[in-house]
Length: 134
Image (tube, rainbow, N blue to C red):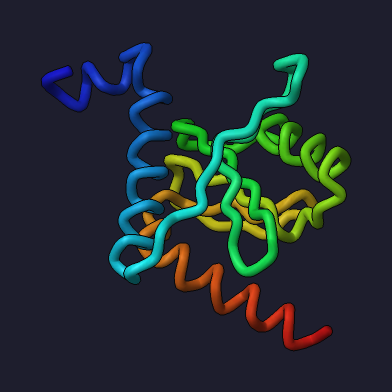
């Protein structure tokens, strides 16, 4: 892959984009002097998978990663299935994609990859705020 044009049609685009995001999440933890608790999860039958589960401050944060520049509701389906199986809250779901806009939806937060650089710090603030409410 030697040019952006080749990357845009490469069958490896999705895998490379996913690797970029997860590598950056790891980097954010390492820069804070912390060991990242990042996991890939696949249901026993292989029907449902989550690209990244972040174990953070007693919460499991589910992250789906898509190299698409637009979003469709189907991108959030695995997150909904994950919530049902794990009894977690959809407000702890994230869809990180190659587009530019951010949205809050009932099934999770849709976030541009351009905002990923401060994700762990923002996540920590959100988790602390929610724990203080209890």
